[in-house]
Length: 81
Image (cartoon, rainbow, N blue to C red; front, side, top):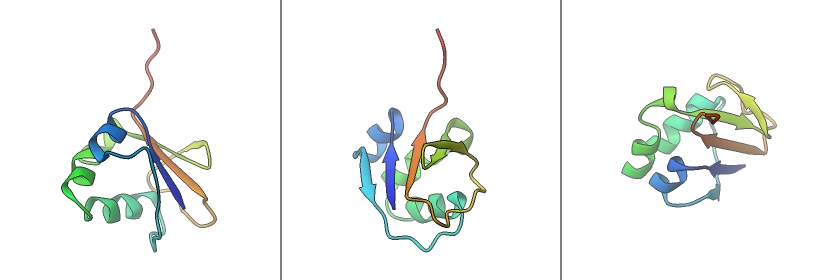
């Protein structure tokens, strides 16, 4: 699946997008896998309350299943101005 990172998440991880082979069944499982990779992922996902996730371009929750999902995107909450 494609995993995309936006804003400061992308800055901490160092790439905007990557292809991931995963056995994770939920978004939370995927985050746990990513955090175990390297410190930069640990830093990016250290506070999940500061992150939002979209599955195939639809806003979702961290407990959402990944079955059939082609794209996961992580980004900070948007603010208006």
